[in-house]
Image 1: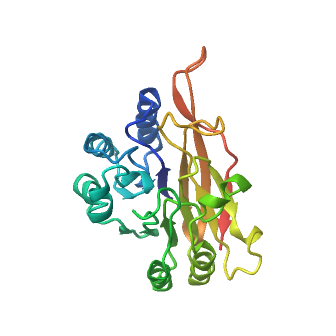
Image 2 (image 1 turned 90 degrees about the vertical axis):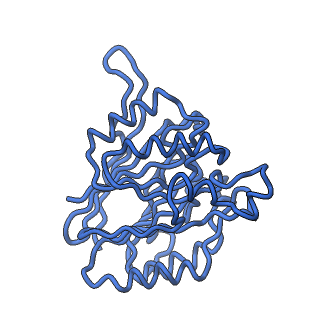
Length: 268
């Protein structure tokens, strides 16, 4: 079994310190082989926030694959936003905004859907679609193929429709045909797992959208608690997904993350 933990929308600058402390303990307990962070690592892309994020990511007990979100681009510093939008991200977190991580069990592909020309909504370009398509098609060993992006490729609440990444349907159809198994995303602070075959019955192959909530930020939405996702990969492309949410201290236990969502299996 190969375990991946998905953190998302950690938003350093608006972090709940009690949740962050519980997260550190949860990650140690879960012992992932890889941590992915699906964007919005900072709140306002300030130097101080990136330094804090860097310090935290270094404490994680496994390799980290992260991609930027719209909050990781300076908002008010217009020169930096348009002339060097990922300067601080590259300096403090990772030089590559579309990293690739491959092991014996999985191919994990980072896709940067953020853009300095939009405040919230993102885009996946034709070139990005082709890159993922090619990497998935070259998967002769039939490893699990995961795409990590920030903006959602599917939403459940009609109110979130305007947050869908532009060009999402073209990407879904191309990546399904190429053999992608999961698309991990964030942005809307709402965790869920959705089999895309329910929305696109004619897809060439099954594919799941795995949305992360906000893992550590005080900026929770719709009273949904902070959360993380655990993705366990097994042979023959069996995938086991659970969602863990933050539970504040009460009389019976300390602050901690607990598994609360029903497990879901996907077999190609």
